[in-house]
Amino acid sequence: MANVMLVANLNCDRVLQLKESLQVGGRHHYQDLGRRLGGGGANSGLALVYAGHHVALVSQVGRDETADWLLAEASLKGLNCSLLQRNDIATPELMLLMTPDGERTIIRPERPAFSLGPAPDFSRWNSIYINSSAEGVEQWAKAALTQQPHAEQANGKRHAVLVVAQLPKSDSQRPCHVLITSQSDLDAHILASGKVTASCYAAPFQYAQSIAGKSLKYFIVTDGEKGATAYCESGQECVSAVAADVVDTTGAGDAFAAGVINGLLAELSITESMTVGAQWAAIAVATASSVPGDEFQAFLTK
Image 1 (cartoon, rainbow, N blue to C red):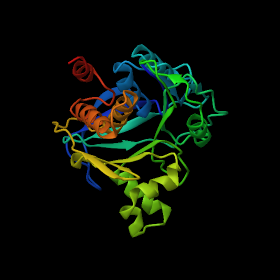
Image 2 (image 1 turned 30 degrees about the horizontal axis):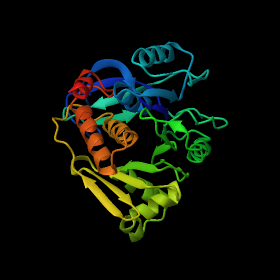
Image 3 (image 1 turned 60 degrees about the vertical axis):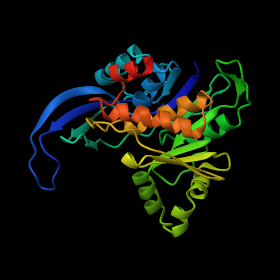
């Protein structure tokens, strides 16, 4: 078991099942499937909890009934919520518009500013996963990267803190060992940067280094059914996607990232770790939920 810190969102998802695909100007009938636990913190965090890790979530919620429900649900499922901040802003529901083919459109209000404060002592943590644009996240990542290698693994060995991060939506820096994104998010990031050149795509690892710094070991880009590619200083490694009957694509990227972290903590190679991520993502898209459930736990017990 490893100690993993997640800096990620904890959401209350309201799922609206549409009878047909979204069309501009169309009128759509839906079935309200109620609210459910969601967000990268829950999606990635619970996958790691079920895999046997101790996971603490760093996020913020309000002080209202919805926030109380979120904390109760997350805690009952095994997430350590003691590091969550609470504010006086009402916790909104995120609207998930689900189409018959399993694709989803997310509608959410602007999030209130979230400030992390001074970086903690990372000596007891084996890994930190950053999937948030919170203020101060860059300083936390740098602190984790410079932590002396005495976080102890279950095998008794001592390792430096593994820092994994999602590509930020903005042009901010994200120091880490492993940077993860989807091809669509990478395209959007390059376009938003205003620096669209052939070199962005011809040298993806160097592009990622401009965001993650010299500590970067791998830049992983997922591309749906096409699988995933890990770029590094010496070249690239690819893994295929795992075939699945798509029911709900929500949380697939979060499950993939959790699988990669789980593999790297077990000292698997980057290719083996991405294979774990692909397996976990396939279970996520074949399950009518964003957070891992019975199907995922059954897979782990095989």
